[in-house]
Length: 226
Ligand SMILES: O=C(O)[C@H](CS(=O)(=O)O)OP(=O)(O)O
Image 1 (cartoon, rainbow, N blue to C red):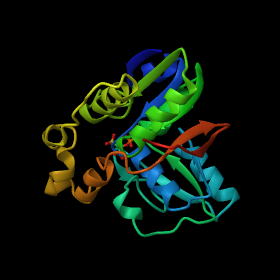
Image 2 (image 1 turned 180 degrees about the vertical axis):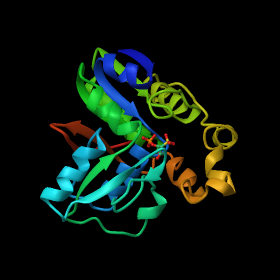
Image 3 (image 1 turned 90 degrees about the vertical axis):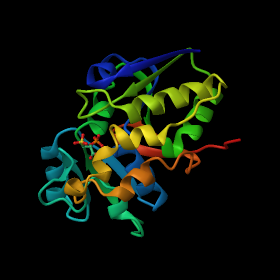
């Protein structure tokens, strides 16, 4: 199995094989929590205008997303896992748009199959890929707005790679607190980036399922992890 680690939006555009689009802070950590909280379906979209069109056609749709981290006007929730804790999304269809993660999904045009990537279900992702045993896997780190690489996404790619290769790997959350995760500990940014989001996003291997992006929607696939 050839394992590529690619970066940013240009990485998503050229990724081949089973493609994992990684966005730890916060898009795909959030999507895992939404599915865990029984969301019926998630429709990730790139353009915010498409999200507004969905809501206009069907007001029961829940809009979730951000630009520059800030909840979009008229949206029900921002891109924050802590904001949705304790809420049931049973029977709810969610339309989700973000600066990096959902852009990666919609741009992975050469992929055989597309999965979301985050720490919260990393082990399940590796287990799923191992079972499929593809010739090629591309782990795409979406970074900051798909333009600048960030420590948490690269670390998540390295962790998934280490699981696939059955090699040891230590996730250095202290390093993340000092680097890309520092915004969650900055009191001036606390309204946009709550501290609890950091801890919910680094809660590694919490969920035994993968999220597959197919035909414009997120589908949950349960995985038996060892
Ligand atoms: O909401 C997020 O955490 C980020 C926004 S930013 O890049 O930190 O401004 O969006 P995402 O697409 O989840 O990386």
